[in-house]
Amino acid sequence: MTEREIFHQRLKMSAIWGVLALGATYLYLFNPAAATGYPACPFRMITGLQCPGCGTLRGLHQLLHGHPLATFKLNPLLLVTLPFLIFALFIATRSAVIGRAEKRYFVPANFIWAFLGLVLFFWIFRNTSLYPFVS
Amino acid sequence: MSQNWTPPPPPNAPPATIPNYLVFSILTTVFCCLPAGVVSIVYAAQVNGKIAAGDYAGAQAASKNAKLWAMISAGVGFAIIALYIIFIVIMGGIGAMSNVR
Image (tube, rainbow over all chains, first blue to last red; front, side, top):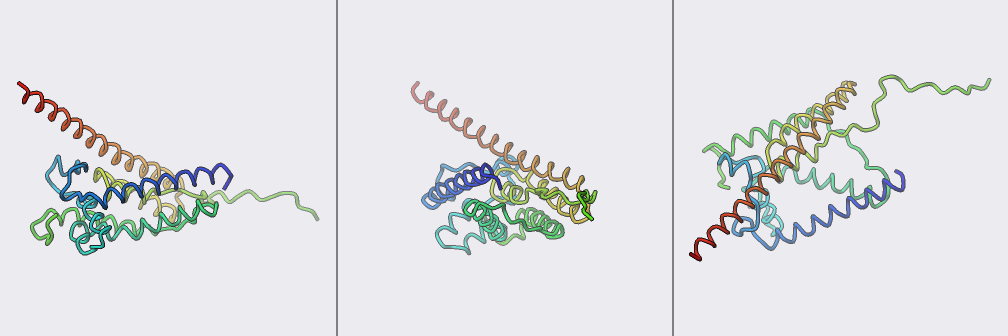
């Protein structure tokens, strides 16, 4: 990495961590399930159906308060993807700190196809009457 | 015998990095905005599938589409939310004015 690239990476990660800290504080203090001050899901607003992302903000609020079970009920997909995203954040942060290019991991295409299948299944399933949770 | 000739890279050497924007596509699908992010996941899978198959030009094209669709998902999602907020503010304003008489 050149000096310039290292600087960019550090600037980018500082911005991301800043947004995360502010967002987490706001999300911890104000429950999206009760409070106003949060945007509605555009897909749900227009179609009345739930999308794979519905319940994410409410779920994160519950997670910040130490209630993973409530998070699972609001959006199970969130708990599935969160470890992957935290890992990606860790790699990017590490790269910024030590000033080396991000270590790249190759995700086999089949894993991504399987994940896509899971997302589509969840999208349909959560809109049926068989889905056990209300969110 | 000195050899001051370096062999050219093999024609099908993998480009150092072809991003698949998987993180971006997951963020737009699960954390935000619009489910158009799922299209982005399709292209992310294509990128890695094509890299594995040695089709680097195809992977490059799929990479572009993965980015494009994640941006569409985020952009349109934020646009709808912004319009919604403007709508609420205008309706609130009309409501407040009609109460004055």
